[in-house]
Length: 522
Image (cartoon, rainbow, N blue to C red):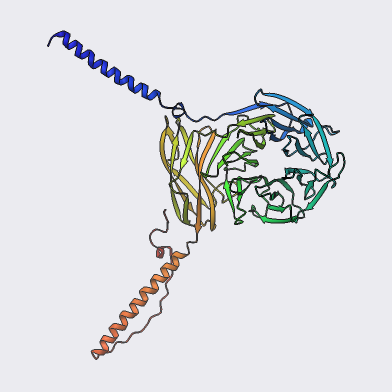
């Protein structure tokens, strides 16, 4: 073979290798961009005038955001497309107006309760006109507000303990015409937020006695449902929302739990959202049926996926924001007010934290003094250091009660995207019997986000173990008696005589009688 032929063959091989490499590169370039990118968290903030003390927030049908500024006695309109703000002064002699809630009617008018001047107010954005209607009960402190299918306005009287209604057809500006009030069954009910479900039933939180009130606007009858309390104290349920299945969700200002009430069964489940009393407040569902809330004391926006039974938490960039109320716009974005931060925040409802915790099963059982091992998988989309956490509805703080847990490993370090495993071990110490909602998840080192998977834990009585031991001993004694009876019968048949003298014995059950290991593993 000539040198020229050898060079041509070598060149051909190199060309083929280069072509193969080029094909691989081209194939990789065809992978969709989103598959190569990590999901990003994007929280945007808009500055408000200093010392505004923003509180109530709502989105109109065009996506404009409206906020009530307490210390400026005004409404502010934010146009998200331009970022521009417009302020509208509320006609009042009071320099400070307490406004807790705003709703938008079918004509685009804004309705809200003015707790300072004891009025229901309306604002028409097309004419910039304010209208006011005087609540007949003095110092009622209107809090929550809702609109029924006829366009009538309903409100809760936090101080009066009444449910109020303003019939639009009978209402007259500057008067108390058209008002009806319905006293709640409790003397000190402290009603806060309210809403209408898809069936036209009105639901209202009674913050004082920790009750959920249902009001039928046709029969004008109340039905109350007691909610879990913190010992003898109220959990101060505040915010209220309804999901796609008709369940009523509510926030608890004095705990780290959220509640879900099933109107069909009357059952209440509590979902832990943190390890300290974060003070969950406003709450809304998004277009996909997820439930969103905010934690006032720890600067967090919280998302609960009802379908997947997962929780995600996003850190608000501004520290000590004192966020309280939340709203959803027509595009599904989540908006919130930062009362102390003098800002309005927005987070895309499709936002994801860059990790995901998963369980192979979401139902566990253990005895009150048993041990439970929970394998948890972690998927990271960009790597980092992650700490596993276990939360529980056993206590108002979200911590586990009468038990302890450990994780192995207790720190997962990943240089890049990938998967890892850890095992959470829960050790009971006379846990109170019952069913609990638990969540296991991970947080990053900087506490910027958290993601977890909910699961159900049933604590069963372990008294069945001594009963089993006693039953086993009884069977052994029975077999022994039968055996002795047979021996005695045989001896009689052989002409012998057997004399049995029973000596009383005392048997004390100890831990060793329950077997070498009383733990129950699942």
